[in-house]
Image (tube, rainbow, N blue to C red; front, top):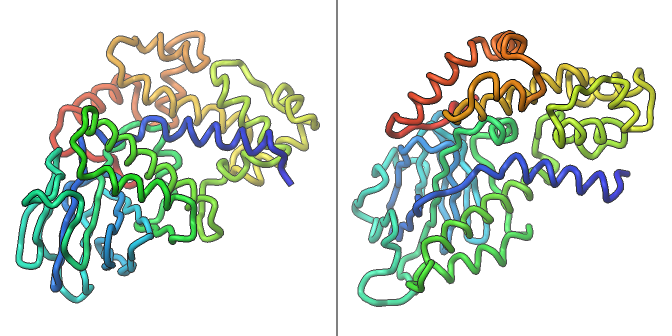
Length: 331
């Protein structure tokens, strides 16, 4: 059984992967619903966090099976395809969010989340939904998030409940810094939900994620994540794990699907893809940061794995960042 150091290492990498995933500017809203109701989410967000504050409903992904979501549970919907939240999957596509319709007493997006008519945080209505949208562009978190199913539901026996309750209590407030508090609470709720999901037996994380806790592959993986620019060899990584090169190569490939050197190259190119979105860094500077002595060798490796040159990738990423309604590919 993996020891504490292996577990700590796995969580450190988890933190690293999700560090750039944040909701910004209160990209979330609250809907107060009376049946029959049906809300259609079409904003193209890569992730949408759905939290029933009261009642229950059904999440119906585009072309997928409905999933029931009740109070106390949390759901994450992987985009950018549209989805519907409804009291009955037979209701149809419903209203485009943001908007209002019969059965929808209140749909608020942005920073105006206080209930109407001065009623404090009390919301009348059989179903109240809180939803938060996350646009994920960075390649590092996408390595993990692409493994998510179209809809995941974490039941109420998991340990995100106290955080959810505090988030709900803060929604109607108006103290200084209120917006920042809500943004960060939603970030924490997303990470808490993802962590609980990947701990569940039905989750199917990437092979490298599970291998982080392995006594043989784990030390090698953590070494590459901690210092990707180091000129790692299989022998040096095997020494980190305290095993032979043959043992490491066999175990690593069994769990991850690639050998250590191939994984290192892929990890470096993932980091490089994010670095290339920073205009102040030249291609040569990016190459050095991920362990390449010259831009030529780096460019060849990047094109081999990504199918385009670093310069072409940078231009495409820059254009995507300027485009309205951008969303990361589903992968």
